[in-house]
Amino acid sequence: MDPTTAPVKELFTQPDAWKETRSHVQVLGFADWRLSKDYTDEELGQWLPMIKKWGIKFALEVGAVKPWGKTGAAAFTAGRVYWDRFEKLGGKIDVMALDEPLCCCKFEFKHTDNKYAVEETANFIALVRQQYPQMQIGDIEGYPTVSYKELTEWIDALQAKLKEKNVRGIDFFRLDVNWTNLVAANCPGSWPEVKALENFCRSRGIPFSMVYWAADYQNHQAQGLSDDSTWYVGLMRTGYDYALVGGKPDQVVVQSWVGAPTHSTPETDPWTFTRSALDFYKKFAK
Image 1 (cartoon, helix red, strand yellow):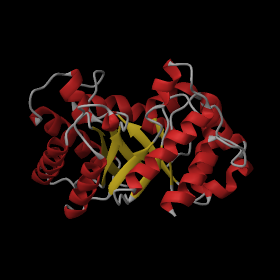
Image 2 (image 1 turned 135 degrees about the vertical axis):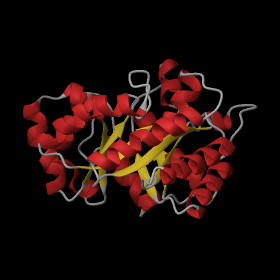
Image 3 (image 1 turned 30 degrees about the vertical axis):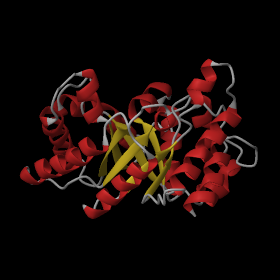
């Protein structure tokens, strides 16, 4: 979850307003740079220990290969400034999700093959495994931005490179589906293909993680048609569409980075983030 600052604060300053939702949450995650940028040591020192007290794992979305960290080593050095700060303030980091290193190398660095992405992502994972051995590490990639064929080749190549380095492979693979593209004319990709990728990951012994979000929100926003109900409807639509092809991910991730909804709590109000997550759980993840 990476919305504006107010909804994040509500999770910690109004804990009684999302008790039922929290009883179903196993992991609470944030983008590392945003969490560090938006909140003071005093705030984080109060809030981060609360996650562990709730019995929830603390997760971060991090850069493994980025324009500001073009190698795994450079990204690790930059990122650990955030991670060490969080842990010093009482936040035990349990999970790291890598923010689309393959997509970055393909579309920002314009690499024509995946060798660089494989090598540098494996280097990053090796450094995290060495310095933070308690963490689970998974990769996030976009679809259909990256094709089914290339994603399966990427997963196998990354796992092989980690094995070559004598480093444990990824603990999960997470797919971020821009489903507005799946219904666009002449666009490759489909929900059945996502289900095939879920099956592929299971065949490799890798838990399949799925991001559910309102991919249409920003399109509606550009037309002046969006509000918090737009977020809720888009989120639930994602659940229905994937369920129709038999989709049952091992990890269900409700995530927002579009500036909506405007409030996280209370879970009793329509359209809030916690109400969305609670209704989604009851319908699709229970």
